[in-house]
Amino acid sequence: MRLAYPDMDDLSPEQQRVYSTIAGGPRGRVRGPLALWLHRPQLAETAQALGQYCRYGCSLQPRLAEIAVLTLARIWNSELPWHAHREDALKAGVEADVIEAIRLGAMPDIKDAAGRSAYAVTVEICTTRRLSQGTYESALAAIGGDGLVDLIGLIGYYTLVAMTVNTFELPLPEGVPAAFPQ
Image 1 (cartoon, rainbow, N blue to C red):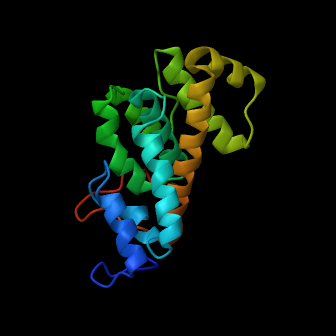
Image 2 (cartoon, rainbow, N blue to C red):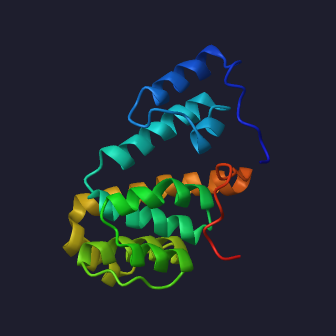
């Protein structure tokens, strides 16, 4: 880890306020990028609000959100968000074979149009930095305008998470093996 988490026993009043906000929300704890962002409490507070919306309040079905998060984590080879979301994806109904294909960097066999769109939009926007008209139209038909806006917001938030994890080399929990082939 390149930058240590702030000392949780020596937080400034602003850091403590933001810590309490995050810990008192639906996450129930402060860890990973959120803990690191406490170095800059305004960033932590703003990012956690976006993350809370993306994870707990957006219009996307949880299954679609988890497909996008796992796909993004794999594109970035970012182990910590993969680890944090793999079980959530299973609970949200993402099939184990789809998760495994994403983990291996292979094309998953996603049966429904909405799931295929969540995957396709994530891959295309992250790798080409654009969304083709065909992918856009398919996504719009499958998840609607509100869903597409929320999907792009979710991709943006989890890109910030992945960049933070990778830049500062945030570790996996003790005893958790890496998921991605080296």
